[in-house]
Every structure is written in C-alpha cells, then in structure tokens.
Image 1: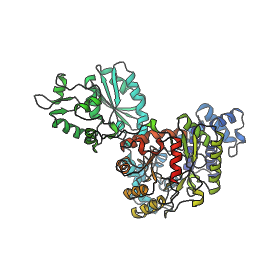
Image 2: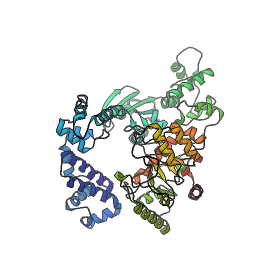
Image 3: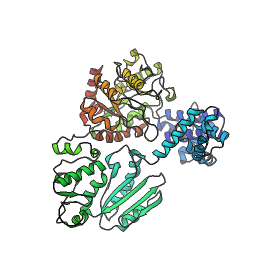
Image 4: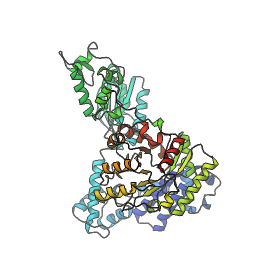
Length: 586
C-alpha cells in the first residue's frame, strides 16, 4: 500500500472508533498518524520501514508502527477488518448525509436507537431529532434534506467514476473476436458532469458471444435484461450498463443516435426531413416511399453510406460536430455556417494553478506534486494551499506562507525539476468580501486564487456583493469554484453568476473551471457566452495529491462542452507567456 492508502485506512479507523465511542486520545492518535504519513515522501516511508526506524518519527507510536507496517507489506490489517465487522453498516452509511459526523451519528444511535437511514428518517418524521440536545429543528431540517438529496443523487453518477468503470468494459468488448467496432455512447460520451447509466454500442455480426461476455463480467450484481442484441446489467456500485449490438453498416447511425442528446437528435431529424431524408438509428434514407425507416435502411441501395460520423454530418451539409457539443444549443447552425470552434484538448494544457500540498490539507509534498507534474509533461505547476481562516484545512499562517514562498523559490533555483513552480495561495473570501491576508503579503505571491469556504447560506445579493468585492482586490488573479457546489452532494450557494462574470471581465480576473470531478465549477453552461464577452478560463484540478492532477481531463470535458478553444484558457500558454501574463496583470 502507498502512504496515502495507508493514511486512508488510519483515518477510517479513527471514524469507526469515534462511532464506537472510544477514547478521544486514541482517535486523535490515528488521525495524527495519518497526517504524519501524508507529510512523508513515498520512498521515505519505504526506507523507514525497511530500516525499522518508523517508530522514531514524531506522532507514530509502537502500535501504529505495527499497523502501518502490516498494511504496507500485506495490504491488509486484521484489526481494521474486525473493527469494520463490529459496527452496524447502517451507521457508516449515515455518515454520507451532509452534517452528520461520527459524533452525531453515535448520539442518534445511543439516544434514539437509530441504526440506519430508514430509522433516522422515521425519527425525523416523528420530530424526535429536533428535540435532542445538540441538534434542534434546523439540524433536523438539514438531515431530512440530506436524505432526500441522497435518494435523488443516488440515481446519478459522476462522470469520472463512470468513465473509470466504463474503460475496462470497452477494452474487453474491443478484444472480442466477434466485435468489429465498439464505443461509449450516451451522456458519458458527451462528457456530461453526471450520468445515469453506461451505454455501449457494438458492431458485430455474431451476437450471442458478445452478450454472453457482457453479462458475465466481474462485479455484476444483477442482470436486469438479456436478449439477442441487447443486455443490461447492474454493478454493486449501483451503476447500470446497457449494451446494444448492431450490424457494422448501421453502426455510425446508431452511434450518433444513442450518443444524443434528445434535443440534438430532434434537430438533426428535422434537418434531414427538410432535405427529403429520414434519419434514425438505422440509417439515413429517403423520407418518401413505402416501408418504415428500419425497413428502408435494411435495403442498402436506399441508405446513405457512412463510415464515420463525419460522413453522416457531411451528408446533411454540416461540419463534424464533436459529441460534447450535441446538446441542441446552436451547434447545428454553427456547423452549417462553419463557425464551430476548434475545441481545447487535453494535450493543449501546459500546467495548472489550483493545487494543494501537505502544507495545508493536501496529501502529497511539494516535491511529489512537482515530480508528478513533470511526469505529465507540464511546464509549470501552481501551488495554492489554503489560507489561515480555513483552519479545518490546516490553512497557512502568514509565517508559514512566507516560508512556503521561500521553499518554492529555492526549489526553482536548484533546478531539481524541469517543471517551474509558481507560489500562490487559495485565499479565503471573508464574509464581507475582504481577503484573508493583508495586501502586503499577497503582493509577494505570483498569483492569488480567491474562494468562498464558509457562510454559504448568505442570500444571493449578499453573496454576489461579497465575491465581487474580492474580485475587485487588485491582488486577485482568479476566482476559485464559482458556486461552491459539490456534485451529487451539495447544491450551489445563491449567486448572480452574470454579475460576477461581468465583474471578473472588468477587472481582468480569471474564473477557474475547477476540474475536480466533484465540482466542475464554473458550470459548462456559462462558458460559451462568457468567453465570447472576454472572460479568461483556467482549468485547475484542485489537486490534493499527485493523482488529482489528472483530473484536468474532467475539466477538459466541461471546457469543450462550453465551446472553449485554447485561446480562452490561460494554462494552454507556455511558461514564458504565462510569466508575461502574470507580470502584466500585476
């Protein structure tokens, strides 16, 4: 196990112990041990264990040494497995409800006998939670809302997790000898921020072996449907996957149809009809004449041939429309006029600015983050750890921030890495719109990301005024996660996005597209018009460990859905151009 994987286990042990009502000092020991591990380099932990010197690290006692070593060498921990088995699964499930930590879940269990979400729902309906010390009517209301949201969100899945689940399925389908072509379809292919289920389209002449392989994949909990050319399965995660098999000469038309969206497909069918044609999943055929669209498509002499989707669009007088743009939002008109943008691509990115290290709440050190950026081929990496008011995220005091700036400058001078590191900060926007540090300190940084992390229940006018004031600070470089949403978990705070965007443009402030798969904020629906008005974007992963840097791929999806080209994205510039841009901005 890696150090961060081990830290995850230690943190979970701490949560489970708190659910059991264990000694707070024992709980903190595991939490402290996790933080200590995260502050080490990966190879440093390997060396400490190999030389049996882990016990000499402050904050790691004998008991933790034994558990960390067992996890590191075997990937398992018997103590952890027994602890998990000793706790009601329903209690752990309740931790998914926003606002319910281990201490509150334990209180609900001990005082009301609540053991799962069903019994918690009943207790709230009977107004029992509102009457408990430490809860009250507002807490009960938030719990009820959290349960309702959980039920609604449970039907959707984040694009990143869905894509990770879908990749091996697609690879497996493509390896089958009977399969000529296979692709994702649906909202996954269009790069939507959340998806309902996975759609796979396969071209094959022999169906049975493909269906048989699909319904026998590892991790399937239930086969919900199985036919000659179709199948649906549900995985233990709740994610459903649907398979559809078509003949090879219908594949292009089916791929376009099942990619969607509904609005795009309707507009495309109307365009076909205006040209005397009928477009369907079976083909592009004459609208007049006897027979259904399927029957006509089966007559190859009537069907317009298409080896690719580009051929299909060309047959209707259109340039190729990338899947991300197929939302019925003017993409057909733009394709007809030759005005579709050349969309930004993952390979265009040269670095990113909103990233964290172990100095605040990150899980990888400065050198680890820099090395990971170098492996990705990035020219530069920005470090923006949390500011002092984010105490829950170990925000940096003025002294610690100055020390970090010095460390970054030293690392750049030593040229240990090819990747240049910019010294920044994610500075809290205080409740009145002031920033968390004095201007004198902010001026010492290469750039400043400003973000809201508290008082998210302010009304729209107050929140909008608050953020605009922060944007107007001359040291503000970019605004982080515009709406504060956490996908499938927390709704956006109330804000007039149009006014904030206009203020950013007026003050030459960037608004980031936070590429964390849990955020994807600013939402893609705002970007097209904003970029046309002159707003600059920066696609930032908000990475808290090295693997998180790869989340820029999710941000690229949203940027493409927002019609963005590379010219609208700051971090497609090379290092020299970024240095010039930042200097001019100051």
